Amino acid sequence: MDFVEYPDREMLALVLADKLASQLGQHLRTSDAASLCVPGGTTPGPVLESLSATDLDWDRVTVCLGDERWVDGDHKRSNSRLLRRHLLKDKAKDAAYIDLYTGDAEPDDAVTTLNTRLQPIFPITVALLGMGNDMHTASLFPGADHLAAALAPDAPPVMAIRADGAEEPRITLTAPYLRNAINLHLLITGPEKREAFERAQKLDPQEAPIRAMMDNLTVHWAE
Image 1 (cartoon, helix red, strand yellow):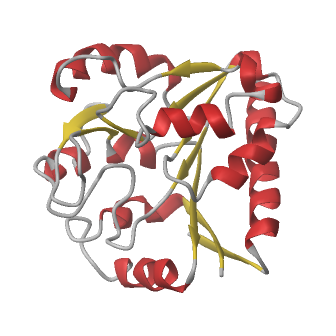
Image 2: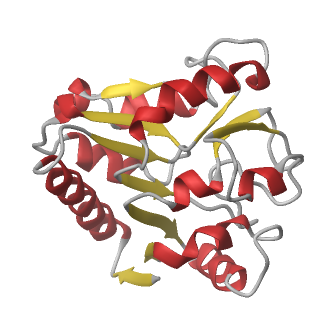
């Protein structure tokens, strides 16, 4: 694991976006296609904004989210809504996008379809993760109903998951498919997130799901 500290969040966003683009571009020099998995929430917005303006063969890149709240894409809490606002525009508008929200009544109803739809993107070329103060990543929350199964080495690519820390039912990529990305990054900001990450290093993944990602992880942090 590598931990990279930046002087400020603006520098972090610029340097990290350049790193992600470089890794995607390098992969595309030897492969027909690449995949990019990104987190929801507001923290990655500046990184995604910078990335959207990058020169890249975006028509050979498939983008997906690491997780999604089970709400319509126009809902204010939709991760897809944020992704369209910050990444899937400008030069990145030509990227293919696999939406985790299918419109089914419950996320459980979409699992089989999504597992099939996502299969061609694995292993993920570049995965960017986020983390909450409770040490969850994607929708792998401490205490979630199917957390043990989602952390297991034989987990399917996606699972429906519910947790007290999540307002809505969620669909999430599982630990092995995130962890096995060719390039794996974590973006965190502020002292609380740094303290939580340091605490997670000493805990079991059941208590701190981000712990399951740490072996091949590059962490990017700014105050």
